[in-house]
Image (cartoon, rainbow, N blue to C red; front, side, top):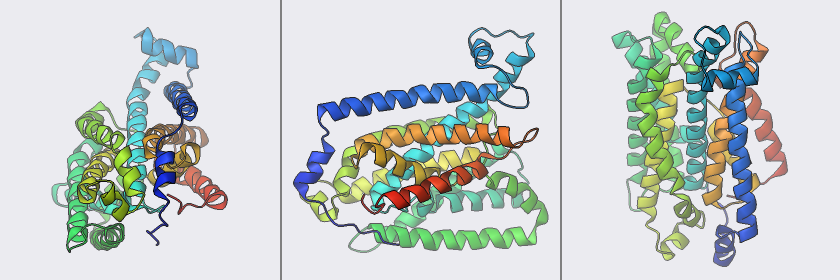
Length: 353
């Protein structure tokens, strides 16, 4: 896995970081169109399911609720999973863009810091020792496990004179993830009851979660999103290489620490609420970069919008293709994301971050 990319000339990179007014206006319009698409997808999401409800009736259920209408009750019941899908998708999209920008690694996703493995290990231990079996009960264990794994990875990578370089972060993350995965496997092969409970969380889903699952992690997602959206300039400097970034006055170690904290808040919160959902963090950042270019001030908000759209669209598709049942969103995102990522690999040089 390569993490180093050739440095661009400073003048060219600074020019890319300051899009002209016309380009900025075009990107702003594109972002507004993406937000409009999210509204449409949200209405479709609350209208599609075992009981189909037209978009107009779905809107009426949200704005003029009739308690005697079964359609309105069905729409209201789908609101929590739609809101959770929007929040989880935006968080994973932002976390993926942050990880790729921080490590200058086109294959980086939030799992590189051991977040998914840490959350999974904590959930397995909670199921085995405490008998917890509900998504609301998993939240805090998953969040604590994700944060602990990320702290260990960063602590190991930061040891030494050079600090937490992209290569050391990748190696430390791979080692910690491997160790935690071994622990998870050891527990699961010795406890079939733990395996039966854990596999429904591990597949990744926004269904069956109410606001009691979403609201506790909302503050973490909000803080993480604000820090992420404010990190565009720091990521632009890091993309020039550590030496150039220091020459421009950037505190490289502090920037990576802040960005890493944002990744933990975003990915830890999303994984705690919905379980591990693959491909969102890896794929949408590349799609966003294909639209906006390398300027992370635009890549980050586009990644948030595209991530939210991908998760909600995947959740809707999962309800349509497996009626009267449904496919979990983690299965659909991998199915949808893999062909898109392969197409991007064939058309673009992904190492060009």
